[in-house]
Amino acid sequence: MVLKVLAIGDLSNNITMFKKFTKSDIHLINFPWDGPSKVIDIKDGVEFFKSVKVKDVLKRINEIKNEFDICIAMSSTGLLMSYLADLNYIAYFCGHDIRSPPFIKDMPDPLSTDKPIYDFNSLERRYYKKAYDNAIAAVVTDDELLEHLKKYRDDPTRITGYIVDTTIFNENVKPVERKKTKFTFISPARMGLQKGTEKIWEALRMCKSDFEVIQIKWYDKRNSEEEKIAQEWINNPPKQITFIPIMPRKELGRYMVFADAILGQVSGIQADIERSGALCKKAVIHYANPKRMYIINGKKVTSPFLPHSNDPKVIAETIDRVVTDKEFREKLADEEYKFVMALSDPNMIASQWDELFEKMNQKYKKAAKNSSKLKIKLRVSGYLIANALRRKIRILKT
Image (cartoon, rainbow, N blue to C red):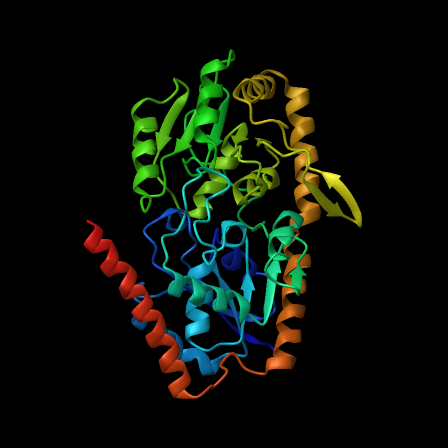
């Protein structure tokens, strides 16, 4: 029996990628964000909500929820909508959605600033807490996030790792047709404080070797402070930077194969960009926290990615060595490739998701809970009142 899975929301294309490899039939509905997730999202086979208005989102979910056997939700918004729609949903966390959950008052983003991420009132935070608590399972794919999840759930589920789409990211992909006059990096990560752009660019200004950096010009337009900072960077880039516009994901794989190496983020958190670059068998420069451990074949190991510091001087030294030392560059690429394949093999990870879907379906039977209409109506109305109250107070303050 092939299970029909309803997926609500996606972050960093995680569900979009693993749905290609699972035997379960996954129908993904994503939010039409005008933000970072929209930039290199895969749109083939993905439905988008027509708006982010709560009533519109819930209307669409209610139209189709009885067609599915189980649900999976990503992002705090995806979890909230699944809770308001009265679904049996698996919560899948991949970043600050569990490092900095929205039900904690004045929760800062640990990777960028000390300022609170959210301005939700106490009533809204209560609804987000219920959305996190009512998930029938809570999943993460690395040990760092597992420690955060354990703070809020006593039943965490750990799946081996993040899937990388090996049909798009591999050394045999046809490279883009572009003139290359010197050693070339591709820098695909979003420009932002979270990604360590300011440290990377400071490092570039210290470098002694000659090379080009193809920088994809994208940043979070939903965050006015970050947008302002990004515009300042764009107006004064290091001499090595050449900007190119955002692109479809398939095209990104072709740019990675074209480049001589990949310039990743230096936040200490490994993301899809770094894993994808490694599977193209390119050396990826990415700050890997040496204290962070990974489990491969039952053994704890550290990441082979370099450097092991996000000090701009150390980053600059690593860049120069990658450019000038072919033997070092090829050895680094080989070690990173083997590491990522051990953690991100798509068929291995997809089978773990299929097992979880089957286990949850056996217990809960259907995606829809079918609670009383009055109960659901009161839940939705309560949240809408809480949300409207925050908006009204914000207007009064201005």
